[in-house]
Length: 265
Image (cartoon, rainbow, N blue to C red; front, side, top):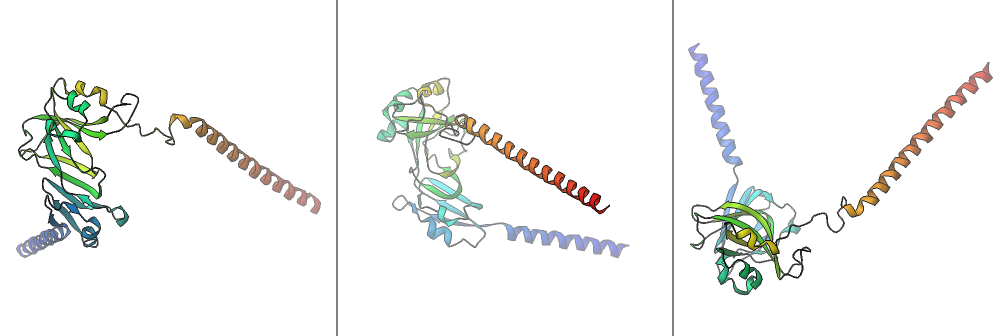
């Protein structure tokens, strides 16, 4: 009995060790690349293609931000790999200058706000977990509201004619202990980070828009309801016609069989 117990214990220990080895081998390696302010451009085709067949994560450390691409979230289509900038800046809104419209700067004059400056137009070769360093600019103890900043967009009737628009992303947002902002992105956008107060949302009301994803001819948009009804009716009509023809054919075959039987008699 004691021998059996020892063998069972040894077997369990071996299984645990094997499980630990398998888990360790399944853990992706992290390859880290560092970029500087002078050379922030990431050549995605060259960098990501070099590890295309390897199970590994890629970590890009830029001047003021870190991009972490988990292996399973990297696009497998190389046509979606575009070069992008690792340079991201965080400035008090008053120091953003021409990067932010004067209308919005004035609207937020009574608020504590910051401009998070990504290079617009960049697409990432996968879903990136981006950590933007506060660099001592952001207050880690404050609670923030996050807005996407969209320059020169006539987004809706409410914001038509405005120099810029904003899209609400999150409220009640807390930063990391070191004042870092964490985002999950597939492409670059600029953001406004506003210390949440009783008046911050009201200050931007005139510039807020919510994208209408059905606008412009989405298949289930209200503008197409007539076509939807039309095709449903046509489909039902065709189905009914097919059923009718099949039924008639079956009936005719039965009659032909009966007629043949009568003739034989």
